[in-house]
Image 1 (cartoon, rainbow, N blue to C red):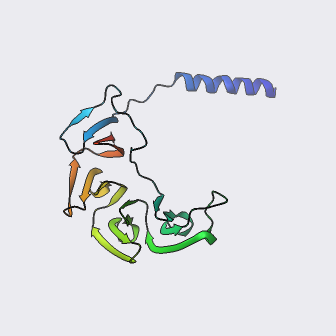
Image 2: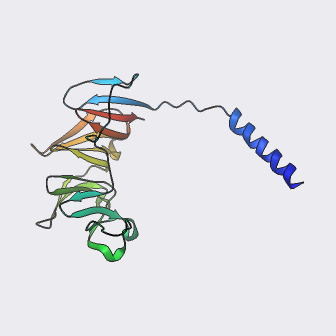
Image 3: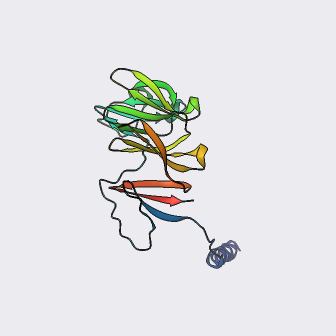
Length: 195
């Protein structure tokens, strides 16, 4: 009896999975030139992602420290020295905990940039050596990353548009008017999910 029931259940689930209609989505991937006004939908794989490709990460290496949002401490920005024995972060290994919850971090030179969760995910900078923290702008920062002297991020308060902030001349703006999902910087191009 049990074997017959299991066999029927297996056959029924196979039919459900095999006969369901796939959902038609409108998301597509788009390639944008950073320094050139090139916008094109990708139809053939003409972009090679390699070790120089830049994407968001919750972990950031700066000198002999790793910066990360500590999930055990309400995502507060924390530091730890690289682990020598196990690959697990333990609370006893954490060196510094800053009172700024964050989800996005990036670095340029020796400065850490992060979204400050206690201030509407605004963009902040941390000069770790001088222990100086400064607010840069009030955008809602999501998926923060950097390339050369420019920060790139999705501004959730602006319909998920990709924004930039240049450290060279302290200017910011919108890179593309599309709504962004995730994105990767590769050389002079940005590959992104257009929502």
